[in-house]
Image (cartoon, rainbow, N blue to C red):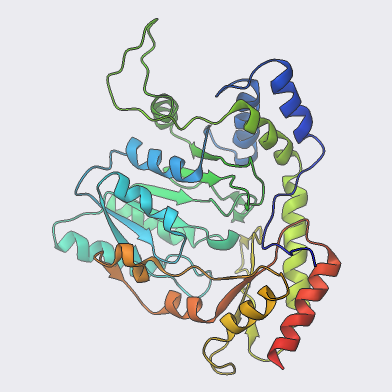
Length: 375
């Protein structure tokens, strides 16, 4: 049987045209007309003042920390329940990650625990230099509360919207809230440029700084002059052509992923002890990945792994929820403020095949096999 993927790339009709245009005009180097057009699309869609397209979401997050002046010895608060790429760039700056656990409604950073963490760090003489909040699996975080807390302490907020392009909070696009926002266009995201990312901001100075240091920090003179350290994080004009075509179908991709979520919910919610995360009022998730929990009150420990293994034998890809960063060996020496929420999510949750090109036949098979596994 052909493999049913968790979230594979889904091309539209226009991507080839824009890529062919890059070849026809010999714009196959970094930067170029496709890059300019792609950034304009993102700027308009997100309703932000500026976007810089880059070669990865991780690179975007690294530059976000750099332009905010994060340096060796600084404390940066990061959501614990997320992919490691949300925290790795903190270490690139030789800063110290401090992890904050999730709340149960959205699975994102717990505002009350965030305040506790800040107060505790301040009491130790380590006022955090930045906060990284993540919209996990496309579900927006509780931004009003988190923004208010960050503002009350004067701490810049970095919004990791790598999984949340197309999601909104109170009718405002995710990726447009923070001092800086970041996006990812990795192959498994809701739209892709094969590999790529972007940095967003409403601060023109930060956008200008990002644009400069992402291109080796060259000064605007007719020879190679460098007054600061730069990076080679630019996006290829060829890949930006893919992004242009993908942006044209983004609303369709969001609609399809939300349909897939509703399909799973309708087919499996009747199974006792299976729960799907709901959207709080004012929250709109792109449902990048459909996730499900197997209640400890009904199912024995490890049921999520039992289902994963059973489906893998049928060539169906599923995946455990993110293992919290405070459980990761690479971060074992870091301070963490935990409440047990992300630990339980990891122990009981599973991501189901959610790609917008997943067929109804495949979805029916996934549901059927999950039911069989749980009998």
